[in-house]
Length: 86
Image (cartoon, rainbow, N blue to C red):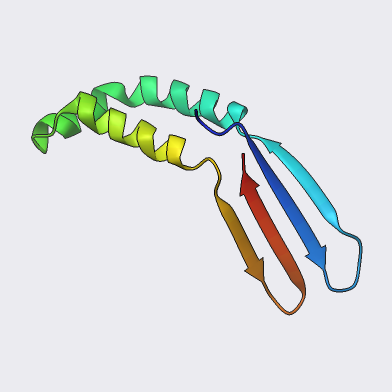
C-alpha cells in the first residue's frame, strides 16, 4: 500500500518540540493528475528508449510502495529532525 502519512518531529536543543503530521494522499492525488497529463510524453519516452511502458510504470509504483516504513533522522548542533513515513 502506498504510504499516506508522514510524521515529522523537530526537536531543537533549546526550545519547544514540534510534531507535524503531513497527509501524503494529497500529494498522490496531484501525482496521479500530473501522470495522466504527462502520459503521452512518458509513452513517447519509453518508445524512444525501447522500454516497456507498463513495466516502467509498475516499477515506479513499486518504488512508491516501498517508501512505507522509511525512517530518516538528521542531527545537527541546533536540532534533531526525525521523519517517519507511515
